[in-house]
Each structure stands twice: as structure tokens, then as C-alpha cells.
Image 1 (cartoon, rainbow, N blue to C red):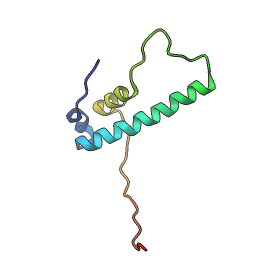
Image 2: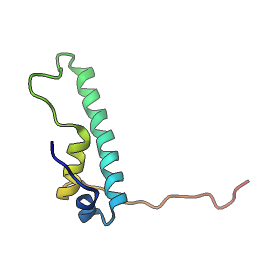
Image 3: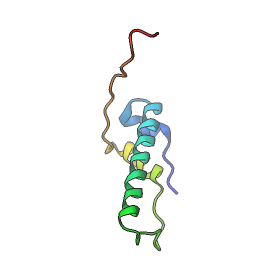
Length: 81
């Protein structure tokens, strides 16, 4: 089992918090893709070889700097009722 620390994820994102958030969002997206694969092809199963956990895959990509992300400003309403 590989261990990726938040500090390692922060190298390419600028902060530990942002690194973990990017990895979590990426893991959710990977989960949706994998779920879609299983719906399209019911013969896909766990198989003989263990798959790497999606969170590990996402953290590795953030640590290596291969995860693409962008920050967008949150739009907030100026007038609250």
C-alpha cells in the first residue's frame, strides 16, 4: 500500500487542503466512470487482480502533477432576502 501525504499533494496545488479537495473530486469522477463501465459491460467484475483504490489513484495523480484542475470564483448573490 502506497502512502501519499497531504504535503506531497500540496506541491502542485499550493496547499494541502486544495490538494485533498482536488483528489477527492477526481476520485468521485473516476468512480462515476467505473460505474458507467460496469453498466455497459456486465461481464466486468473484480477480476483476479486487485484494483488500486480510486482515492490512491487520484492522490498519485495530484502528487505527480498530472491531475488537471482549475479554480473558479464562486458566484454569490449580492442581495439576500
